[in-house]
Image 1 (cartoon, rainbow, N blue to C red):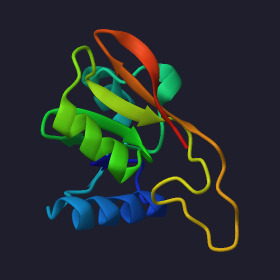
Image 2 (spheres, one colour):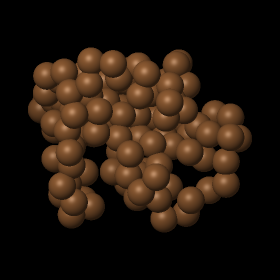
Image 3 (cartoon, rainbow, N blue to C red):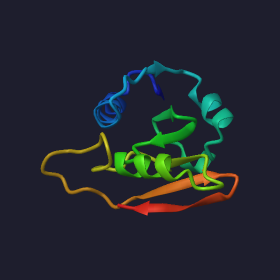
Length: 120
């Protein structure tokens, strides 16, 4: 997982990924993450604070674990990855006790363009 250096919410998301997938998550503080995002095919309108690669798929930002598991299992044609742009409160790793979650969309991107994959 490439992240903006020192971003704490990224570590919370990585801990959820580690627990759900039973894998270690290598955290890389990347001062040139914009280049990594471009090279990974993340549309500029969908950027967030971290970019992860799991089994060849790209996950940008605070993508919920359930959506990650579903796309990795199904491997839909034309989808290279999923993104949650920005840092919506209540998304994976951005939970704040006592604060209601914001509504947000998970966007699929790849050769088939972009489309809403899930609404939360």
